[in-house]
Amino acid sequence: MFSLDPLFEQVMVIGEGRPYLAALVVLNAEQWSILAGTLSLDAGLLQDKRACSAVLERLGAQLRSFHAYAQVRRVALSMEPWTVENGLLTPTLKVRRNLVMTRYTDLVEKLYEGH
Image 1 (cartoon, rainbow, N blue to C red):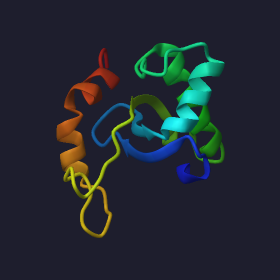
Image 2: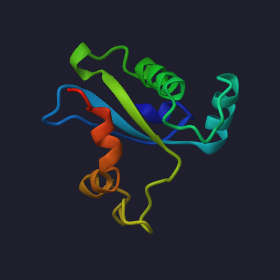
Image 3: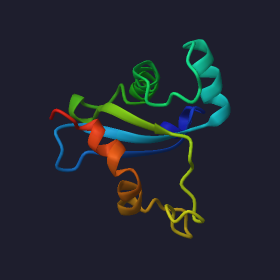
Image 4: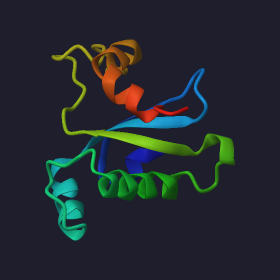
C-alpha cells in the first residue's frame, strides 16, 4: 500500500509486543528533497519533528481505511536502502526483518521512548 506514494522506497511496520505501530521508512532521495524544501528543512534532518510529522501524515493517507489500531503512530526515517548487498534483503528481495531491527535498534528504541 505504501508503494503508491513515490516518497517511500521501502517501509517496514513494527510493533509486535509494543503499545502501538511504528514504521521504519526509507525515503526516495529526489522526492524527499522536494518535500524538505516545502517544509523549509535541510534534507539531512531526517529525525526533525516536522519531517517525521510530514511523513507520518503521508503514511496516514495510505491507511485511512484501516482501523485505529492499525494506524502507524511514529516513524524513523532513513535514506539508506535495504539491499541484498548490505544484507537487509534476501536474494528473493524479502526484507530480513530481524537484521533491519538489529541495524536500527537505536531508532526503534527512540520510537517507543516513554511508553
